[in-house]
Amino acid sequence: MMPHDSSSSASDNVRAAIISALQEEKESKVRRYGRAFLKAISVGGILSTLIYFCWSSSFDSTWMTACGMLTGFLAVAFLLYAYPQVRLSIRGYWSLSRLSLFFLLMTVVTGIQLILCPHFALVHLSDESPFRLFDHVTNFYMSLGGMNLCMFLCGLTFSSIGTAIASAPIARQFAFSKVKDLAFVALLGLVAQSPIAVLQLSNEITIQFFFFWLLGSATGILFVFFLFKKIQELRSVR
Amino acid sequence: MAEEALSDEILMTQYANGDQTSFTILYARYEKKLFGFLERRLNSRHKSFANDLFQMTWMKAHQAKRSFNPEQKFSSWIYAIAINNLRDYLGERRHDVEMASEAELRSDEKIMNAELQSITKQSLQMLEGLLNELPPVQREIILLSEWEGFQSKEISSMVGLSDAAVRQHLSRGRSKLQELGRKLR
Image 1 (cartoon, each protein chain N blue to C red):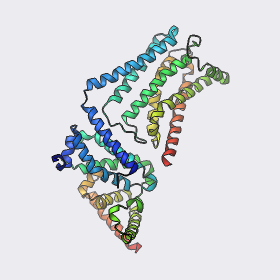
Image 2: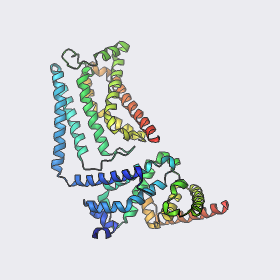
Image 3: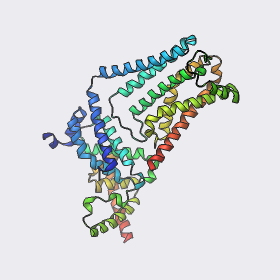
Image 4: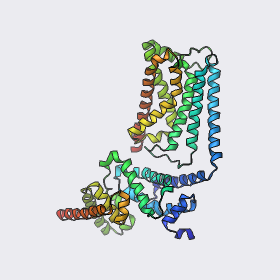
């Protein structure tokens, strides 16, 4: 009955993935987790340095907290990903490796969002930033409906793009995912974006519009998830 | 090779302690059986889930390998994981998890010639129809007993029911199948 065509390759994948997991279990934990920690420090360091050089004149303790959070999240994601486990991509099943990979990518995307669009934290530093890609977008959103709509649309736009980028490598997972699982992954996405929230909540002006950004961001993440789910399920049926 | 003569339970214990060879032997023993078991429970529209469920079963077995009790039968343990996965993964599509069609049930060794194929086809079609008349739990227990060849005690540990309850389901299921069969004649 088995191994024929696709099931045969699935069988080979399982065997190889379990053998690989057994080898991971034998590896020194100190070396394994040490390597993961170093990766987190490196990526976090690069992102923090870029943020600092882009917004050095506004780089205060809140920005430092945000950068610290980014590095901390990266450490958690890298360590969970390094945990010895069977690394298989199964449709609809969110294993630790898939969740940690998503969290890792989403945290990196959050760092990039802070580099590209610090307006989330009401920093008007377009003059000093080398990346002035989204000024016209912000101006356009502001012209549509002021700060409320701008924050909502910014949350929607950036979170949608960011989630799409972070989800692309694990797109297969979305097919046949249960709604409660997707809600949990969306929550994870919002946690990864919390450094942006910290910046907004620390400012007496942006704190007034925080709810609109959060609403836009959550809508963007969920929209992309259900879009990916639909596309992947249609591809599976074909 | 001496290891190939070892029981499933010993191999599983060695695998739980990190032995790759034991895993490879155990995997070779069960990959076809387990895949077939999952495939037979899915209709043609959901056949592709068999791959996912197969992978998930082994992944969960690996995660739970240290909790394996060597006094327990390995086959019961791995089938219990597969059944739980099947229930959980397709729980939302339970109405679709009907018996596999006749074509899916057909296996090469069963079809010796055209005449036999014709008989098998009819019998399996009839069997499929009859089994779908049974409640899901009864159908599962009948299949595990009659198709997979498990004893009632083994089935009870797989489906989470007492041995007496499994025997009762088996008895009622068989009676109902006989009754349905008589009506069809």
